[in-house]
Image (cartoon, rainbow over all chains, first blue to last red):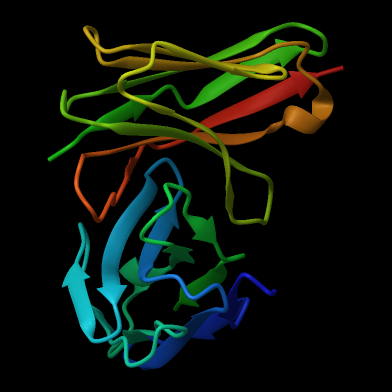
Length: 112
Length: 112
């Protein structure tokens, strides 16, 4: 049981480049979320999903796209990276019958 | 929307008790959590309390909830250097999605 996995661990992008941050969970959790963590800002919700085929926006969705074609995977896409998207990104998942969110180890993204 | 506030830093001596405080604004918040983040890692759920409880104790951890003042605290007894981490308060409303709102996190520094 690997839990929540995220790839890559580190990434450097140039302004305007695109990339996809991967997130997968093997716990058959219905709910998955993407957060960004910035110094002094805590965690802010980007997008979340309550099941395959269903996604919704969180607090800071601009510049990010998501899709949920399977229960296991919830990729986060940056279509045109900007320096303001330099952050640590965390994916989390939760069962509909549980209160605990399980977090991945994070992806540290730098946009120059 | 919900606003969750925490002080950013707390410094204690090893062996003393630590008290980390959190205030929130939405009185309908039903599930209240404390997460711990060690350096370079994701968040792990430390403990949680339901809004129909005033106190929860789990070994060295005591959570107190004052619903009238919308105040949540986490007390760590006999604080050890291994407790040095960032502690996040999070609250979520009633309803199926339980999407929590996180505070900015309190960095706990434990001096030997």
